[in-house]
Length: 539
Image: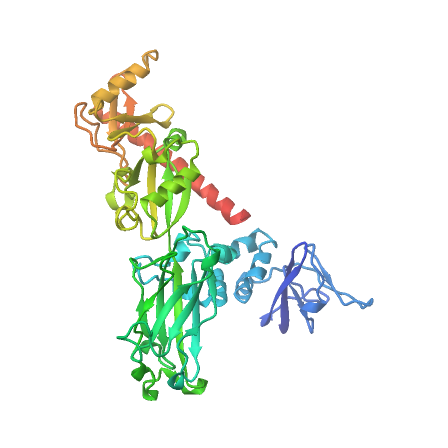
C-alpha cells in the first residue's frame, strides 16, 4: 500500500533538537492494526517540527501540549538508508554535526566529503575556486595546506584559519564620476585588514596614467596599531567585472616577488586596469546600465605564509623505525620572511639554546623528488641573514613542496658533514636511531662498524661482525645488497647496521633484513587502519 507521508528525521543533543524533513512517496509496511511503523524515523500526517519535543531515547511518543492525545509509533522497521543519505544533503553544517550524535552509522555517514564541500561552498562561495594564480601547481591550495584536505575541518576551522578573502566596490555613474578616489569597505583576513583604493580618473601622482586609465590598489589599513617591525605578505587579483560576460573581465595578478607590505610600503596595485575611454563605452558592457551606470571592481586576496617543520636530534633519538620521525615543532612565517626572521622565531622557540645563529640549519630534501630517505640537502646558516627564504634559500619544488611547506634540521652540534646511523635487531625487528657520525673520521662502513663494536665491547653478541645497507625511500626501502666495508659514503647517508649471525651469507643477511622491514611496514599499516577507525568514529 502506498502512502504519502512527511518523514521527520529528528535527533537531539543536550541543548537542542535538530530535525530534517522531506516529503516522500513509498510503500510503507503496516502492523496488524494498520499503524505505520518505521525504525529511526516517524511517519505522521500533518505534523510540523514545532510539534516535536527533544528526543532522548530510541522509542518516542510525539504529541502536542495541553493534554492532547499523543501519537505513538512502535519503531520496528528500518528507514531506507538511501533516504537518510539524501536527506543529509539538505542539512546545514550545524545540523549535520548534530546528526553525529544519533548513532555510529549516522556518524560515519556524516563524513561524506560531498556534504561538507557543498556546505562550505554555499557558506563561502569563493572556496569554489582555490587556485592561487601565482602558485598554479598547487590544486586546492588552502584545503590541503591549512585543513589537511578535509572539507569538514574547513567548516569547523574556517574563521580561525582562513587565508583568503574577496571584496568589491561599485562606482556609481562611472561615466560622470568626479571623485578623485573611491575607497571600498574594509575587510579582514585574520589580523590583517585591507581595503581597495580606486582612482576613477587615474592616479594623479602618475602623469602617464592620470585621466587615461583606471588605477586600483590594495591597501593595508590600521598602520598605527601595528608594531614597528610588522610584516604582511599577500598575493592578490584585481578585476574589472564585465556586466554580463565573465570571460571579458579585465584581470590583473600580483607577482610572488611583489607581495611584501610593511611600514614603508603599505599598498600594491596597478596604475592601469583598463583605459577609461574603453570602460565608459556602453557598447563594451563594463558599465552596468541597469545598476545606475556603475563600474564593478573586485579583488581576491590571499595572505601567504611559509610552514617550516623543524627537526631536532632529540626527535631522532626517540623515533623507532624507518625514516627520522615526525617534526618536533612547526612554525608559520610570512612568505617574504628572511633568514634573520627565521633566526628570531627560533630564538623565541628554543630559549635554552644560547645562540641560535651559531647552529647549523639544514634544508631537508623532499623524498618524493629525490626517491631517497629524507636527508639534509644544503646548509642555510652560512648565508646572509637578510636573504629572503622563498626562492633564494628555499626553492619551490626542491626545498619546498607545492603547498609552501619546508623541513629544516636544527643542529646545535654544527657538524659540517655527517651520516645517520641506525641499528636493526634481526631477532626482535626493532630499528633504532643511535646518532650521527662525522664523515671526516667515519668515511666507510668499516670505520662505523669498528665504532659500534667499541661501543658494545661488553656485549659479546653485539661485538660480532656488522653489515649495513643504505636506507632509501619506498618502494625501494634499502640498497639491494650489503655495502662494501670500504665503500666511500656520501654526506647525509642513512645507514642501517645489523650484526651477522653464524653461517650468514650476504644473501641470507639481506633477506632477513628485508623481512624485518616488511614486518615493520605491516605493523604500521595496522596502526594506521586502527587510527583511521578511531578518527571516523570519535571525532
